[in-house]
Image 1 (cartoon, rainbow, N blue to C red):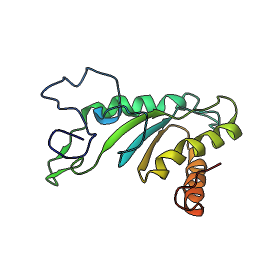
Image 2 (image 1 turned 90 degrees about the horizontal axis):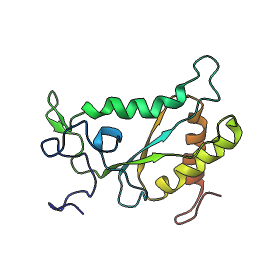
Image 3 (image 1 turned 120 degrees about the vertical axis):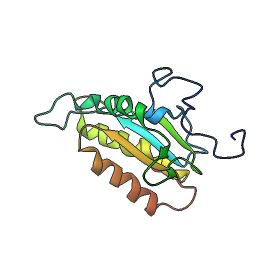
Length: 152
């Protein structure tokens, strides 16, 4: 839990650590391995086997994280702190198997299952659009399961 009693995770304070320091995560939110206590979870899927023309999309999650370093928690036009009241963390990249789209589809669905199981909202950073089917399968499996049951 944070010092002020708010959500345990959120972006780093830019007045205490320059934006170019630290491990590159989405919007400088902390990296955590366990989704417990996370409301919004950023996860990467570095995969491009299913692309037909744009090989290199596997670098999409890395590029999105790099670009997000300049995001600020305060939205000036709307006068809203977009991270306030939410525990936001980067859970790193899901496991993938380069060259094997079928196996990777199962890995993505299985990797999203623990995030969905704790009630967190996954925001998936990708370069290859084929992941959408995998995410839908994870959500459908979660809906079909009862409380406390796990995706197999």
